[in-house]
Amino acid sequence: MPRITAIDCDSSKFPEIVDILTNAGGDCQAIPLDSANATDFEDTDGVVISGGPHLFTDAESADTLLAKFTFLDNLDCPAFGICLGYQAIAIRRGARVFLGEARRETDAIRMVTTHPLMAGIPDGTHFREDHCEGVDLPEGFTRLGASEHYEAEAIADDRRRQYGVQFHPEVSGEPGRQLLTNFVQMLRTEA
Image (cartoon, rainbow, N blue to C red; front, side, top):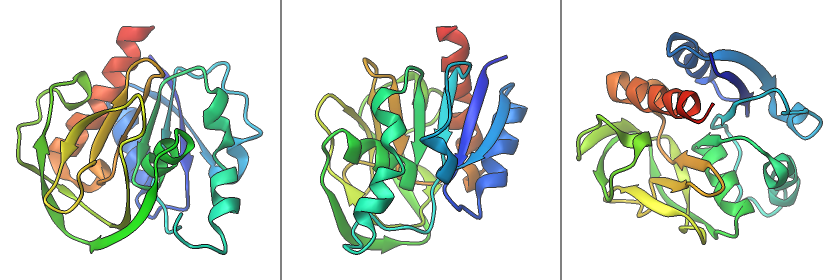
């Protein structure tokens, strides 16, 4: 059973993330983002970082917000970010963040390439969006999915074992459960 640390970035959707990871066979420990930099992830098989109501494009708080994710720089286990967590992974790897079109509904995700994270999810599947920022594809990452509104909706860096999605699988029904279950399965395969 993979040991997963789920990091809550003040997301109202966080309970759904923990529920899906647990039902997928993960042994889930939840911590707040403010504790992440002080957490020893040595006994963790994988990390999942939630979305949250924070903006990396807010000039007054961007540096403080990004500093809360320094744990990512030395993390020695796979990490999967959702929305804000996804942006944090990308920005810490050199991506540019930008304010884009606000998306508060579902968008069809065009699968750009095959990857175990997206296994069993058909091209054009609709996922729930809840964001107004986007990121460029960071160096070393592969773009897995795109939407009509954002070119980098799902990304992967298999060498660093870091993955992320701009959308919210935790509130996207069966396809979202499949995606999070795929991440748990990737942890099992790696162990």
